[in-house]
Length: 275
Length: 110
Image (cartoon, rainbow over all chains, first blue to last red):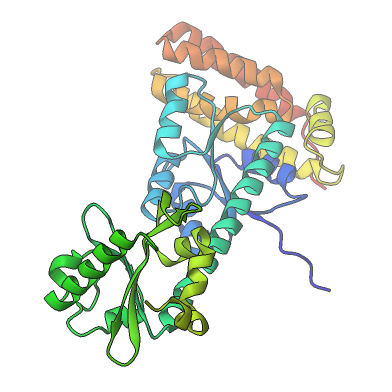
């Protein structure tokens, strides 16, 4: 049976004995990668940043100090993804504030309490790995939703209500005659052919007058249609719009916020929604 | 080996008895490096170098159980911050004596 992979910690401290003690404290539950200065720490980050669960950095080190390592982590967008714990023998508050400003997740004063530092690293690793798992699941759901919309023969888009800039579109929208290669970010009123803009506006006005649905659509040649992801309207008993609960700016939000509307986009339901 | 250090390494750090001599040796080596730095900074007195060497000592001394060394290092660091030459010389001498005592108690090579 495979042994589950142990979280890996990068430990950078120029004092051999400092590393020996901390390595001994952490070895029961973590694999420890060691660096004797900031440069070695950066090299370790370059070679295995993706596999690191936390970074423990002494502030004062030869060659490159802990601040330089934090700067490197910021440049590589690792701050916020990997917890960075700074170790310092300096007890003044300003020095600790500088560590946090540089991107440290936490600052531990040396000499440290042995039980506390292990607990702290364990807690940070746990929080950051849970956050990473959540983000990965969110990305997967978003990608799935985008994939569904890209598979539709209908063109689907969303715009920012204030600027009319396109915030999302699927593959069929990008293939519309006259559409720019990458429509996202463009003003819909100027980037699309006039006929398209007029049709979209007319349909929107028509829908507003009839107050039946908030998502817009109109037909394209070949029995295809254009949908605009828009407000999720709540209708009262009389069929009047009673509330607008949110602007839908991308496909994954659309599916999360309005699953019933999402269902209307699926090909087997298209007939039911034709005007 | 000094009993205070051995006890700390065994009970707090969680080392096996077989591992303690190795870490004790690393402790003495780091201590010797810091002491070299302090001696070089003693005459003429180089406050910045003293602060650097005592910073390292302060960082690890208590975590190996050498509280006496940590206390003297902290006093010496403060004296260097205050640019107090006399206190620095006395502090360095005191650290030399403590280091000698730790070295005398070092495990013998097999």
